[in-house]
Image (tube, rainbow over all chains, first blue to last red; front, side, top):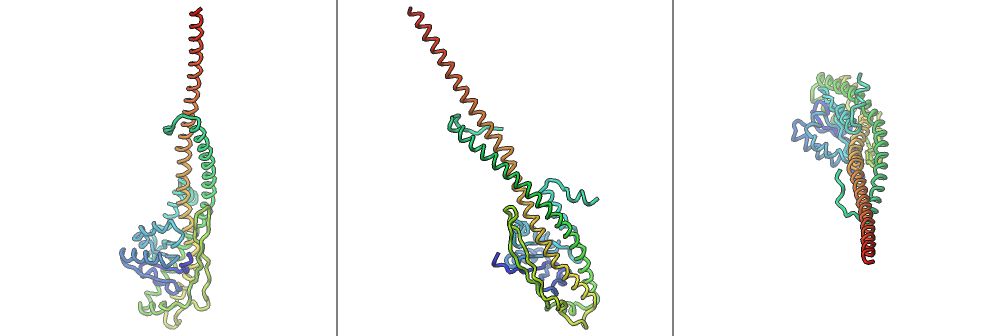
Length: 111
Length: 214
């Protein structure tokens, strides 16, 4: 992990990512699937944490799956400025089902 | 359950008994590992869910106030305002081992917070200030979410893999070995009985012949 310097990147549509620029993280606006895939793939080599909007997460799902087996990069879906489709929570639900075999977390607490 | 294709010999029996012992022991160990991993996973996934819900709500609020700021000023002004960030986030990355799964660990070093706004207040509206301030407060939480979510992902994968191993041992390997051991034991017993019967038969035949000679 020594080659990484703990860089953070945000990839998504311009409306959603521009605000992050003021925080000093690397911001990459993308508009279409090709751009999103290329960008995520490139960032995976240099950045430790990549926040992607849900749209980008869907576009680059193939790469995200590949990164899931190793600790870095950490790719996290976030809702975009126009709202999220609940992809993040769906991912948590999927994890619970995978690990426990049944969804005990959401049943119990979402009454 | 099919038995293994082996010769019914004592040597084979001994070998299989050893293998069975190893398999049972391995099964127990893996099952314990699985239990512990699930316990850890439950701790992390609860936090993951809580963080995710918090972050999504707050992020939505910050981003919509940023949208508002963009609407009230021209695009060029906004882009210029955020173009040269005054702060930078430094992140120490390492990994730790949870039940033989390598998971990421972040060490967030707070940047210089005194200079949060990288623009002059004269040029932009207060909406931008609000959104930048709330977003920068949110960033550590976002990173924590990243860390926890990745941990959950990797633990879930590992738990599933481990469960396959446990099941393979419990439902395939151990029954197979037991069946084969039973088969060999019975075959050896049968051979022994066969040998005894043969001896008795031969003995009685010899006695008959002796009687006939007399």
